Length: 386
Image (cartoon, rainbow, N blue to C red; front, side, top):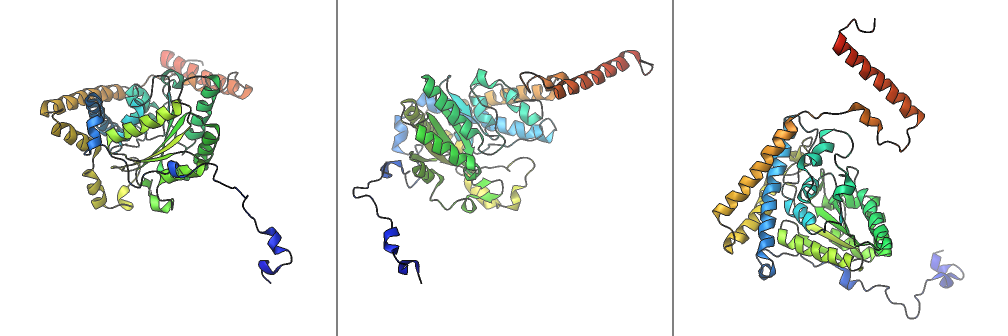
């Protein structure tokens, strides 16, 4: 006997309400079928030339920053570095669209975005160096700690943005995440809460093709990650992540929408991670060189330079000037990172609890005794204390 043959089965068949309509029309929430582009299109004529030149200078500096930080890992000055080479347009645009009082919530790969927002390049690498804590004061810079656990920064961004809205503060939070992070539960929870609360937050997904070694096709069957937005009742935007002008425009519109009280937006930037996941990864195990070479033809620095030179806004001297400025930054970063940090071991206990527990006090006392004994040994020799 089938369910349909059971007595009274018809009474259990759900029927829609007589005048049922979607709570929200999904059509305006859907992204364009193709990533939005500006460079190489008529839309570029509407972009401020000064903005294009600034984007170029920052892209060149960002590319050099990535190269220098990668070299520092090989020299043992950094424990690990997740390079964003190839994704610089996303990183720079995310930093430049925010006002000073807004908040940036980066992932572990978004060091460059933090630097472009004004963070000291050395402080941005402190965590990756293996030093204590974050390396910088999040409140001072309005940059949350570089988040290593996948997607846990997203609910934090929603909470801060919602709190700011309740207080009447003009604050927008921009939360950055990779395509792998969209497979985490925190992604769902953050987008759902943000849409229900109309929180002033922008979710910025850098789809660089792989979650370490897992390609996007093995993570989701959605037409695009931007399509996921409609399920939460927010707009989804799809943009060419290597087109710096397009990313800046789309993010600017999303930030403006959030600031006007119109709620969150999910932006997916289609880009590519040119280098390995980190210096501890061997990308040749899961992708072929021809794929990497194909993406090099769509390099964000090259795309913008070509546009600027064709429009007569940039010449060889200007390109060289940007490279020289980047080299000065890299040299200063290298010199400062090659100096051993002066660490205070007792700081380990300073920011754990507002009031130290008995266990922490015991541990602090033990460490203090060891440090005093070591100092006594250095000053008076091995016979000290006998």
